[in-house]
Image 1: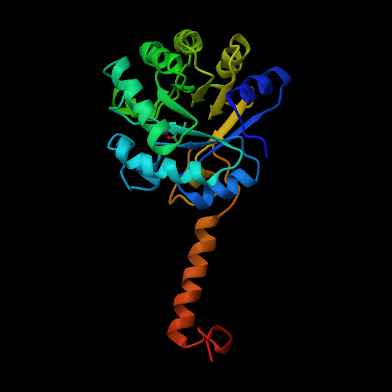
Image 2: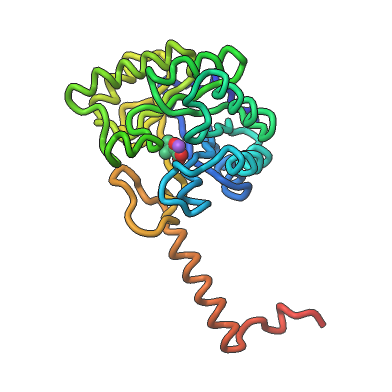
Length: 265
Ligand code: KIV
Ligand code: NA
């Protein structure tokens, strides 16, 4: 299949074709999502929660994400692989940001990077883009600043809608090829989408955006406990696996497995 490039994103917006994205942290899920035709795979710093077992994304490091990104990049034949730049790897300035982006492109063969922040990340985005590395921006609720934002709170409500639009225009001006809108009211996301030339990718931003992104462990029912309101659970992989494990354990304990058909003569 023809590889997805950043121009696929602008073409899709122009023609009203919805863009699809999922997170992926390993070769097996990357293969499955790529073969199903998902347009881009985000190796999110949500790996902090879903791979490394941290409570937030804050402790995640570049060194932790690089091997995961490399595995995902090796697995795909079509999807665009976006590497998420973790907290502490770009905030201090353009040089640090470019250094991190280059590491993901060079050491992990990512196709693009993502970083959080609108106006505040304008310089960093511009520096990375002018070096030839595509950037996906991320505004609205930005989990790396959850302590500053005061928790998992919907962004862009009321007067804050103006700031969200400013952030969106800033990342577009900086050269981002797409922007993730996380947890913003549907009407505000729709307005931002209509005012931008670059596509908007919603995660908890309602239907009137140019694409949708979900964390795979949430959408597939792999996560333990509650998932956010915006997540639709398309499968219940956790219970399928749990049943399989119980069955295996009980078959071994009762001598049902392995049978003759699983044994060598
Ligand atoms: O890390 C991640 O999974 C993300 C998406 C939720 C936008 O940044
Ligand atoms: Na992230």
